[in-house]
Length: 199
Image 1 (cartoon, rainbow, N blue to C red):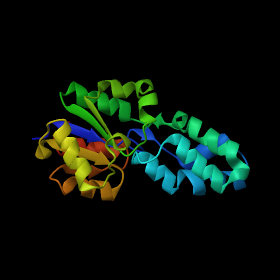
Image 2: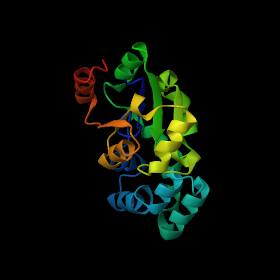
Image 3: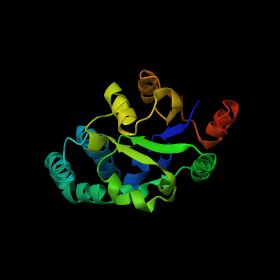
């Protein structure tokens, strides 16, 4: 019996669109493409999520690669979280699950910046626990991150349902016995919840 609903964050609860975000930093396509390639889609960004590097270190490394855009790199780092807006329909769905008595958890590959904007996201006030990759120094879909998550909150794998937009993360959860579903929008998720008796 499912008692706990575990959500990924980016592109499940909150919209994360780097290509759109860089347009708020610069209208110059050359600069925007450099910021995407050298920063938002870089090894450093993954290292931030893994807790293996500080924001300052990441910025320095990227600025060294594209020194002509150093100011834009800093601005990209300083402001990226302002672009995180709720996915349509998800705040309402989260509220409905809470009202039905489910425990709600976040399990996300994200940097320590999370703790700076956590309080600004209204639906997070309904959550019972947060498990952030950078703090744990583990990344989905590693088996260890799911095992540590269960251990941290003293949860039984078969009583958890994990929702993620990436197939490899869904598979990672399933490998430790967690029931998992790939997110394809709030309407589809609502249908899935109804079909499976969650709601």
